[in-house]
Image (cartoon, rainbow, N blue to C red; front, side):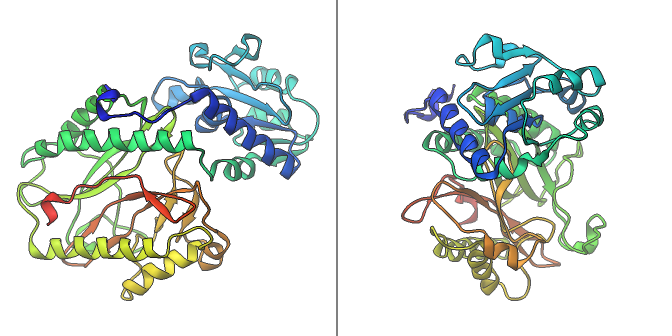
Length: 392
């Protein structure tokens, strides 16, 4: 169980939920929002503490929880198909049966519960969009992003524990990745281990992608660059395959993000070791620029100065992204929004970021991994613990 991983830091989930709600209400007042209507499951978890069991996408959409948050001291109202997932402190008269918002009847029931004033919503169904016509609406994403971007101590501890579970499961399955092993088999073993270790969910379908040595050998891409990620296949891995790993698991609603590079059946060769060293050197340079008050552009500029031949991250991704109740959330660094957007993002204590640069040498493959860090008053704390044994 998770206790075996040495989780000894205090974790008060009720306190964490109170502090999250306080941040939301603060942002609602700042942005002139009277009520939040939340349909996104990560958002409902964040705002109301409601949990639902894992399910396929079709079932999850039709059995999703819904929450209304008001800008006062009143507890949230939630509509859920799984009332056992409501937190203990939520009054029973605030926990309602699930709504089918794909139908007008369910949408009107939710409408009847709305207070007057400006309503910010994160997702629409067509019936909900229709019944809200004429109401004063806003985008809930603006409120949520501003509240979620700085984590409390309890939120940081949840992310830290999620990372530890993820890495322990990876350590358990890595020796089984040998020639002839199928990626789907690795997935099964990995998922078994994470739940044995105390994970409360799996958020990223585990990726064990065999990478070509050049772009022209890989799948077609509209950007003309490296394709990643692709769906895990049932095909057996072969000796010498270069595998890029990416997965994420959840602990009490908070995500981890793990990335690394593996060589199947043999030790990395000198060129591959060189690529790994370049990646680690790049991370070191980016971390030197990482501190409160630095802009996202400061970090992307530092990375670009190390690799002047090409931007050292995938163009359809980013140099870094935030993580919390979503596996990718604000802040985002190095997106296609450009340098001007990065100048507006300023690092502050409590932000958590996943650095994921890529070293690519077309014709020789490349190296990719992910480092999870939290911004502190003094600089940063590394939350991940990547193993480099086979690369040194």
